[in-house]
Amino acid sequence: IFIKLKEGYRGTLLNLLRVLRSCIFKKYEIFLENLFVTPSKSSRGRRRINHIRIFNATLEQFENAEIEHLNTVGINPVI
Image 1 (cartoon, helix red, strand yellow):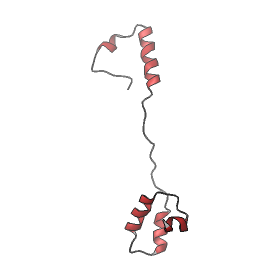
Image 2: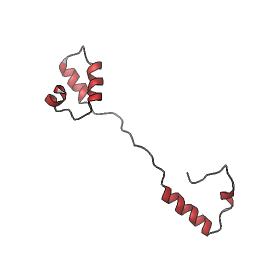
Image 3: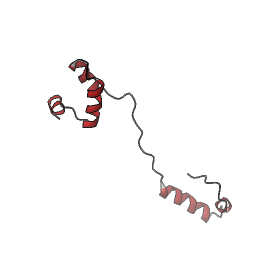
Image 4: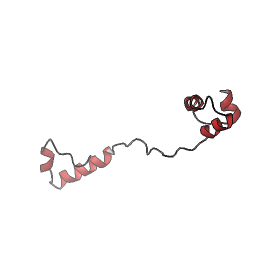
């Protein structure tokens, strides 16, 4: 925690511990470089299913009497 406060690191303690373990026998400056490195990739996050859009599309198909494909079990074209 002292390193986190002293250097102004805003990441998690788990990430700090991982960087510390990988740089334990290297110079302190190299440790700081690895600690504050920006990630090369970013996650696009969890994809959530838009249930309202699926419901509206199904409702529109039902209202337009395009419901023959809804009677089959194996095909789910919306998801």
